[in-house]
Length: 153
Image (cartoon, rainbow, N blue to C red):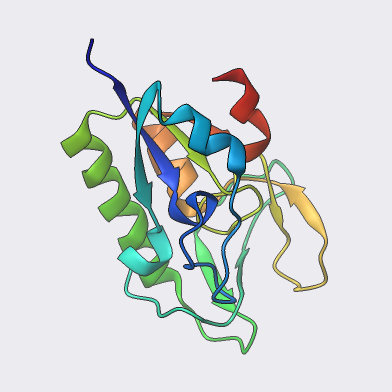
């Protein structure tokens, strides 16, 4: 029987690609490899950003969590929106190449976050919203979940 391909944030699989050079290994994902083909992606690296890199957060959100104009800046104030958009587009291409209908992405990330992200003040404040990649995947019919939903797979 052919296994379903699922996109997964590479950091959740133990790949050191987070902004701080670390990972967010989720041991429960390893068990899913028996049932699914897990396709690792790091949208921020796919967008050309280095690892490690300065943390980044989204700006220009209204109170519904929507992004009227996507803007992502790093802690120094440098606009890194183009890299985040490019990474999202490359991730969507990979989803298409592998026929992925679902994704398990890193929660709260400005790329991968789903439902809750940081507010853009670098104060640790969380707000409703989704990362650039998570939004693009959902807009294209891919069901996005965060790592807290691994048990439902």
